[in-house]
Amino acid sequence: MRKLLVLLLLLTAGRAAAFEPVQFLVYGDLPYSMEGKPVLLTDGRSDQEVFDQDIRPMIHDHPAPFIIHVGDLGRPETSCSDADLKRHLGYWQGFEKPVFYTIGDNDWIDCIRKSIPGGPQHPLERLAHIRSLLLSDGALASYQPARPGWTVRHDLAGLPEDTAWTTDNPAFAFLELHIVSSCNGRDTFAKQPCKMAPEPGMDAETKALVEDAADRDRRNLVALREAYANAEAQHRTMLIIAIQADMFGEPADDAKHPADIWERCKTQLEFKPYCDVLPELAGTFPGSTLLIHGDTSAYCLEELPIPAKAGHKFWRLNAPGDFGETDADVVMIAAGVDGLPNVTATGLLSGQPAPPKCDKAQYAWKENGTSKAYPRRK
Image (cartoon, rainbow, N blue to C red; front, side, top):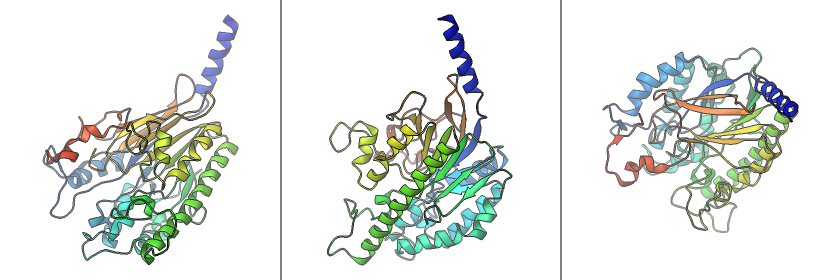
């Protein structure tokens, strides 16, 4: 028995030393201040000022080798303009390290809102502008400088924004997919439930969005399956996936919002295709998975259940931003005492770990409107 314990300890030690840790930065869903409508923090500054004065310089100076942006460059009233796209392009160029941008719903589908300065814009036209201004070869070369030993593949399954990359650390593979809220780009707030397929009498604009989203879903799923297959073939320890949308919603004790997080995802028709396959793909993959997203204020890093053998883990990081946490995250993945990957996310400004559970109640002021100041956690 003692020999068996010694052997297990040796195996565990070997596994713990089997890969080098990786560190990177994550942010999105900010700044949300706009002309005449600043998002104020408790220190009296706007989130734009905090972003410019604190977050941007710290991102630039941080030793992490790259940045993941989880979408929503700001409110639709600002981000639905070429000028704002160019402003963020300037930010990314100034970081002087690769930035991987996941498109958010505020950046294109929500441009159909009546509140957009100059009037509503066609979402697919805005998406074309994003692809032209931020995702062209020239733009990418300006904020995704090449690194020795790295591989970066754009245009996965025919979607310019879907990207897979690896660094010089052989333990990890990364993937970005274009999955957004607002019915995953099918519709706007006024037209619920989400329409998953064209219907008789549907207006031409909605039909175009529905058809585009269905095609995007198909291509995303091809890219997702390919990423897991490649990660397994290359013996990666972990696959890190970045999207914009929070696919999981809020837990509730009713049939519409099941307590099980995967079943809760499946009740949202626009995200069901992904949650139908993600647990199985993650469960059969010999390594672990980290899903990073933005979209909601329920900032957290939590482990999700998957049907898998021992030795597999699945985390999701709901990144800071979206009227909940004016910050960026430093994500670290290192070997735990069991030899398996251990994920931590620490606020770049706050220095505090991400909450272990997603709970919008910590930002209840937003729901009842009793506070005008942004309650950054200390």
